[in-house]
Length: 132
Image 1 (cartoon, one colour):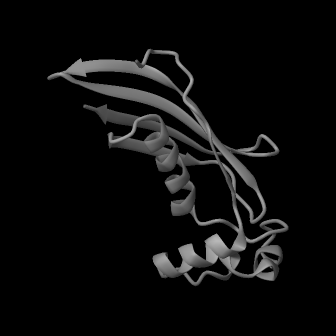
Image 2 (cartoon, rainbow, N blue to C red):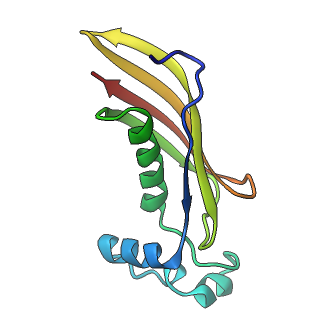
């Protein structure tokens, strides 16, 4: 079913202010760069509010669940390389790097990128998934 070198099904999401407001509440994160465009501008962070890092990681987790339903993430290393702004269309894509069989289970190692519609890479992830 899975093979090394295979591409994963991508996952897309439009980042909107309403979602960032919800994340700010969930994370108890009142940082104005997530809530007020003028605060982000004043700090030279761009022309939109900045999406929370944990939300970006959640997008990657959603993509993993789409590709490996019922699986378990056993290892995840993320490198944030750029900001995601309100209004960005993000795409999470990746490929299977390695598959290990252990005790009738598969551990699938993946390389994943979160990019904006401008093809700007915002997060690079290495994820190991336990598939029963």
